[in-house]
Amino acid sequence: MSASKVYFTNFRAHNFENMLDKLRRLCKTAGMESMDFQDKFTAIKMHFGEPGNLAFLRPNYARVLVDYVKKLGGKPYLTDCNTLYVGMRSNAVDHLQAADFNGFTPQTVGCHVLIGDGLKGTDEVHVPVKGDYVRSAKIGRAVMDADVFLSLTHFKGHEAAGFGGALKNIGMGCGSFDGKKEMHASSNPAVDRSGCVGCGICIENCAHGAIKMDEGKAAIDTSKCVGCGRCVGACPEKTIHFMNDQANEILVKKIAEYAQAVLDGRPHFHVSLIMDVSPYCDCHAENDAPIIPDIGMLASFDPVALDQACADLANKEKPIRGSMLDEMSHTNPGDHFNAIFNDTNWQVGLEHAEKLGIGTREYELIDIK
Image 1 (cartoon, helix red, strand yellow):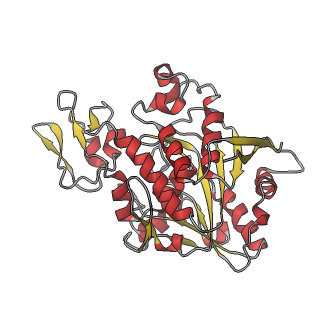
Image 2 (cartoon, rainbow, N blue to C red):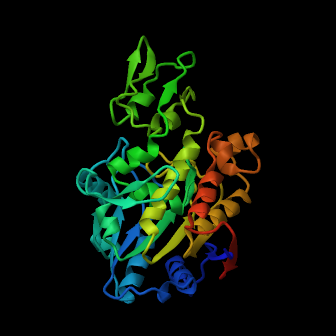
Image 3 (cartoon, rainbow, N blue to C red):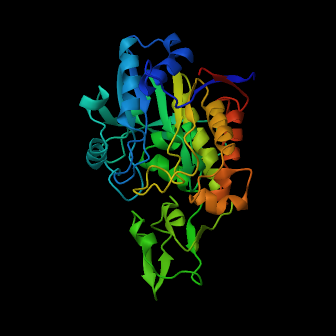
């Protein structure tokens, strides 16, 4: 497979072109107008941010894609699916309130916001997949009903996947409630009781009542646990870990297989912004300080090449002083994302996506200035 083209522009702006104009020009130069949008339902998949998180992408960026799709004759809508986690995004009613709270309304973004898997995360389509782990991906119906699929991604760190890029936005983000459970089901976590201080933060972060205190120490009921790993990332003492050492690698492979289910057989285009690169996913109500400086905006028809380019650009940057990466960079100086989360391996996910034929890790970076 030949190298894919990934288009890049930095965050410099001028009095004749603001950042939103520049994003529109990026999409145009990357070839978005070559797609047939006429009378096509167009899903724009993005993350609306957990209330309290301030690193998510502003609605203004979504409005650029919405207006562009409308100009090209399409019928756009913003979408995301419900979560397994604590917070306001585990059902459609609260999820829409969270989106509204963070500024994603029909008035601000110029289109409707649809929760992809319905009220309780059960409105799903089973999509056949010939993967190593997934045979039938469970994808939100409002995602699969779209004629055209666009992703708008906030590139950031992630405690289980290494980073959250386009593939995670697509694969994990479009999975229904049961789909997310399937992706996370590689292993249940366990507590090292000798290091547990009984702070209870893991209990606060478990949406399924799977963790309780036993003689002042956390204990996990594996019959209730869905394997989401939220407690692993939340534990300040780092005493919770997956029982399967390969859990995170299996997770990113499953994410790739779910992404294939979403993308296969229909036109798709992808935009990623490397800004406010928090160590944690936007699912967290706390985003922590950015780990590297803002870099720029990228667009491509190939989400694999896009993720690889984003990772390469990010890894060239020096850590921001006082950030989590600044504190942890000594653990793996060549890989910022493995440095902050040592048990992750994002490369495996991109390798698997390439094997599945979603795209290629080989890319040509085209700077449009």
